[in-house]
Image (tube, helix red, strand yellow):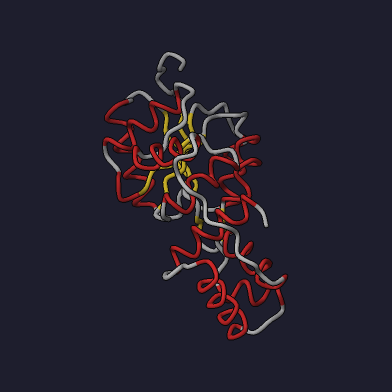
Length: 217
């Protein structure tokens, strides 16, 4: 890990002003001389990212109707490769790994602010990757083969299409529009997926979808 350094310019991307102000307040207690900027929409975030240099980007995954997940590589490129720390209300178990694969350097849940945010910011500024201790332990168990992977279920072609869109965080309505099917039909596919993948809740189905799509059929 590199020596920790103090940031001089930080960009906070969130569609709620109170969150942007809260993040700024927390970080400024640690780095009072840092220059903080905010963006509340996708286009504004991409525009400001290009107005670097930046030392750190703190980014929410959801910006109103827009999703930042697929645009993380572009955002990071626009910011000159500055480290990106995701700050999200979405479940870490479902989204953290996917964010890391898309170019983020860390993931912090909005329910775990305060010291966690400061620790995460210091870690990514030093060139490390940050996730919660619980997720770090699970990733380590998986890397040494101590977390059993469930056998892939036999899915139909349409179920695979639905599952991949679920893994992307799409809503039932969005999936119906993309696949040109009714909401009732998509709900039926999702129920079948829950049964086949042993997912009792929407959050569990999302976790199964991400695991299944990353592993492949």
